[in-house]
Structure formats: C-alpha cells, structure tokens
Image 1 (cartoon, rainbow, N blue to C red):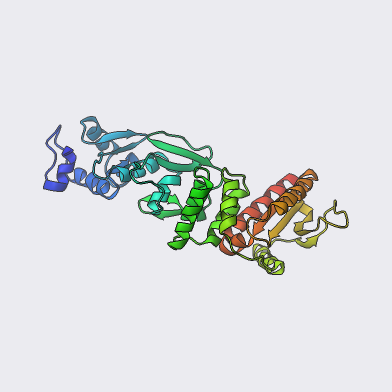
Image 2: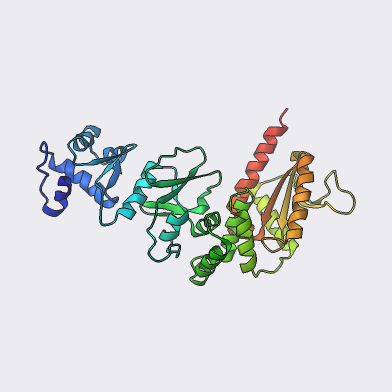
Length: 334
C-alpha cells in the first residue's frame, strides 16, 4: 500500500521519508479518495495544500507524477475508471467519447472477452494532443447538447456517441447497436436524427453510413411543409431576425425550379427546411446538392434544417443561424 494511503486504513501519518503534517495529508487523501486517486496541482492548492507540499510528496514517492500537472496514487482494483479520469485531467477541454463513452452508456460495443482498450477522448480542434494510452479525436463541432456530466466524468451524449461510432463500425453492426439502444429506451430516433443532421451538415466521417442505417430504421412520414415553416418562423421571430422572405425567388430562378423556403436577400443567405424523411432519397439529395452548388456559385450561403433539429435542438439551430448571419454581416462590410 502506498504510505500515504495508510491514512485511510489506520488514520496514522506515513512513516516513509520526512514526517508530514497530519492535516495536509488528510486534505490530500480526502480529495484523492473522491477523485479516483488523482488530482491536479491546482486542485490540491485550491483545497488548502501548498504546491511545495505536493512537490515534496512527489519527490519522496508518496505521490506519483502522471505528468502535465497531474499527481496521484496508481490504482489496481479499478484502473479503467482511473484511466478515464486521468484522460480528462490531461485533456481538460475534452470529453470521453466513442467506445469509451459507449461503455459508460452501457452500450454493448465489446465482444465477449475483448479487453476494454484505450480511452477515447474528443477535444476541440486545435487542442493539445497529450498521449497516455489515450486516443484523441479532434472536432470542430461539439455543442453543449452533445455532452453530459457524470461526476467526475464528462462524456458525449448517447446520441453523439452513436453518431461517432459510425466512423468505426460497419453498417450491420451500427444498425444492430442503434436498434438495441432504441429497444432498451436509451435513445429515441428523433434525437438521434437531430444529432446526425448537425454532424452530416459538416461533412463528418461516417456521414454516408449514418444516413444508410437511419434510412432503414426511420419510419417517419413526410411532414407538412407549412408546419415546418411555422416552426422556423417562430424561431426567427424569437431571435429578432429582420428581412426574412418566404418562398423566395433567387436571382438565378428560371421560372420553373429554384424557389427556396426562406432567404435573407440582403445577406445572401438561403434557409431550407426539410419536410421529407430525415435522410432524403438519393435523387432528392442529388438535386439539393445541385441547387446548393448553384447558390454558392452565385455567392450565397445555404443553411438546411430538419424537423428533428427544429423540435429537439432549437438552440443549436439558433446558434448556427446567428453565426451565419454574423459572418455574412462581416463579409458585407465595405
């Protein structure tokens, strides 16, 4: 047993090295015991332990130095849990994700006898990539709705986790996993489709596989477009967006096709709300891409939102729309 850990069993200070103050050791042990036996220097200082006191205990071997300002006592009985906490301490801007998050959500991602494998962490693009038996994924899109807190852990939501796994699992395995999660009432398809839409819009790896699998699982019928229009208009009013035109004819309209659902002409922004099934048919997707290509060639920005996003993630839609407006206003400045 680590000498410092004898405080837990005996209440006596460690004998190894120089005598340590009872209250300092107890402060350290109290914090470590509540955080998988790991802590940053800053966290211990915030608890009333001086940095010098921590360094002394590291120097004489009472605490192990895990690097990057993290110290603690290695565990053997629950090393997986400690590795997860360590990964987050080494990547303070990240969240546990992919297979690691799937296990925490109790999704059956491991085959019988498979070891748990390395810890997966997703960090904002440009963040540091510390490696300590950790697989680090960088992303440009990690909104708050895609993460959850499970003290002391931060991890991706079950919807985001399933979407991320599309980049690693084949279609058959991914479909089985989603069906299992739906059957166990761990996730609903509406929320999952909303998460997938947000990622698909950014061209994330696994987009095609997500579309294929959710295409097979989705049983929703086409929605009345006017209902979608009302939803979006209500959101636009709440955001105080001015100059929004409905059923807009863009400059390249040929008199037959090309009318768009909404537009902010003064900012050259087009907004389309998708009333079809979430994935759209292949022919529809091809036509949408062609229309978007024409719009962009004429210097316009195209935004697409679906029913799932407007009903389950209005905040995400609002943030995306306002960001596009701010960027367009900046571009329009002389």
